[in-house]
Image (cartoon, rainbow, N blue to C red; front, side, top):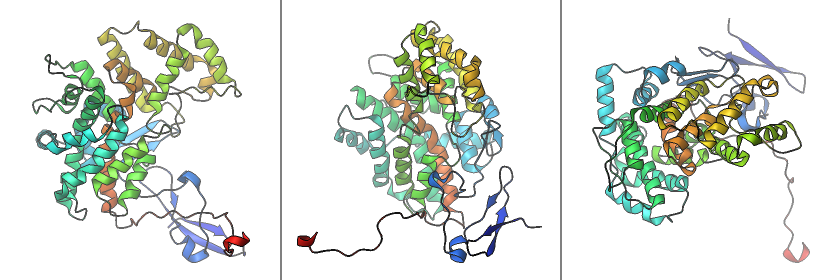
Length: 429
């Protein structure tokens, strides 16, 4: 029997709404007919209780600490797959076989170059501009260079745009870094893997040969996998909302990057490192913890807990393993900052104050440490996040385009301003 929810109206009447069930997770009440039948809206600031779409891409159970990409647990994907396999999965719905993977990797590899005029585009920015500001502008400008893939109603155009964005983001992120550093751009090398190629474009210089380190490449590849998608978060919702108007995919991804730049979203790993710098030394952790527990101090524990996960962030366990591997590989176990981070982690995992509140270290805590160890500056952290999340944004955008139920986004409001009034002549105001 079909499930329904009954709404009791202020005038004493009732109205029924269908209840829809997904393959897993909470049911939803379908209120699309609410305004037409009743003349009222729902009120849900931040959309915390609103399902804005139906999706088959990513599932999160925050209470149980579950993250699935197309049904596959993140714990398995991060161990058994590389980032481009995960990209294929998110875009196409299934993991590739060897032939499919080879073709996909070849297609991405052959799109890593950017139009040569984009090189000159960078010179319009100040050298000290934040790399995210540069990235928003350059990605948004891609539609001016690749206008042969802007017909969003054409499946082939959408596929080409997806390949271009996934392939070119590492090149553009590395260019933003090099420009900021005052170093020459490094062009991609087709014989390298996706992540090794990115690291070379970031860190190679003309004065010497660059050699990839497979432990470090795998660490960054895992960061990419863990950040590839995360359901209907703020930046993904921004991409979908932008796309609902028919905007081209490059503009939509630029909008997602702009949203991600917000410190409450993509800047969490940066905030965690700033917190460690503020603490300064292992000997000061006790005083810092005391301030965190004092509600009146205003001191916050950054990189712990998560808005969605009310249990241990499943990505954090994987990132923790990677963190220790990288520190061991680089001989940084005795580094002041990393010793401080590990000491803070130990206290937070054992102190009942944090355990009872489920304030476990999240993926941002560990990924910030790993990126710093890799030599990636703090100002680039959110760019790395954007690079990884691009595939999720594109998969979500493409799903929205072909969804017959999707309409242009148009949230409503509870108006609390002035009622109608007349304009007085200026000499009578």
